[in-house]
Figure 1 (cartoon, one colour):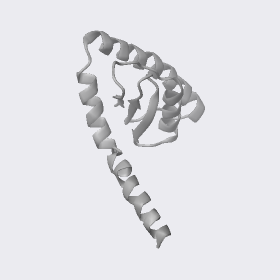
Figure 2: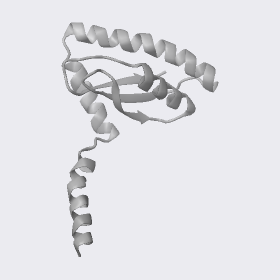
Figure 3: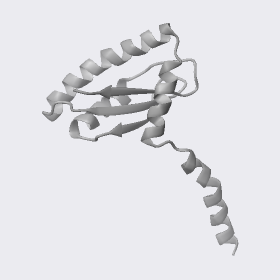
Length: 124
């Protein structure tokens, strides 16, 4: 009985952690909210970081996968140090998997927040 009680407590205590995890749509909405709240200087910095890395990642992933990019959205949650702590991807392909991997390795943007959500939306 003691083991069952312990297991039950573990499950009950862990449920809020799973319930609090955002889905793709919620993360995308949060990215739009966070991005729109940036001052012009931080927005300019974000766009520069994204622009520089997107160009390099596109070329690298086209070479690696032999695929051209098609419509996709990558949402990223950044931690206090500006590194990616979580991603959500709409339309997973070899190209977008490669792109996501390069972003996770190289993307860094420091805002003034503990968590910051941003998205890269690509449409042809």
